[in-house]
Amino acid sequence: MADHLTPSSNDPGDSTPLISWLPEVAALRQTAGSRACLRFPNAITASADGFYREATEAPVPLDLRVLRALRSPFEIDIYVWLTWRFFRLRKPVTIPWASLALQFGSGYANPRHFKKRFLGYLKSVVDYYSEVRLESSATGLLLRPSPTHVKQRLSKR
Image 1: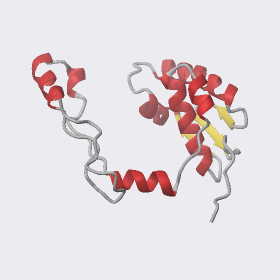
Image 2 (image 1 turned 30 degrees about the vertical axis):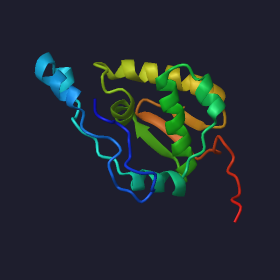
Image 3 (image 1 turned 180 degrees about the horizontal axis):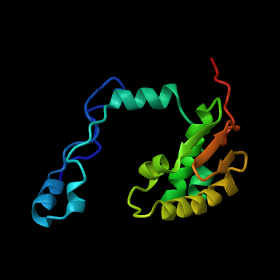
Image 4 (image 1 turned 60 degrees about the vertical axis):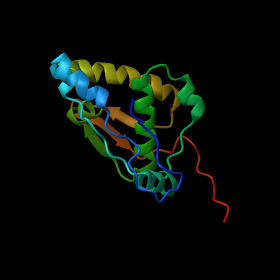
């Protein structure tokens, strides 16, 4: 089995891909013949230096207690996404439902089903992140600048 997430070193400047080609996926494609299997790429290229730089230069604070309390991966995805969006949001923005469906759940045949499910999970997230200022509309989700969920620490320099 291929090493999926093994950088060649711990050097943040090392640009060796963190994710390698997985031969078992190629074998599955050849034997399964399923359209679903064919939608996934054989390889994803991620550079260690790019990820490290993004994570250290522009970190987004998350509350680990909330991550542990949320029950579904969908809720966790929404929490992380909202935290990231509000961390950087400077003016109101409406995210169209179609864009949210592409990001969070493109497998829904009916867009109304996605919207209903998304709003249900969003309610669970807002129970933990009550400071968010957002509104659901027929066209999308309106996000207004809100306090970050985790207060920023002053750096010690």
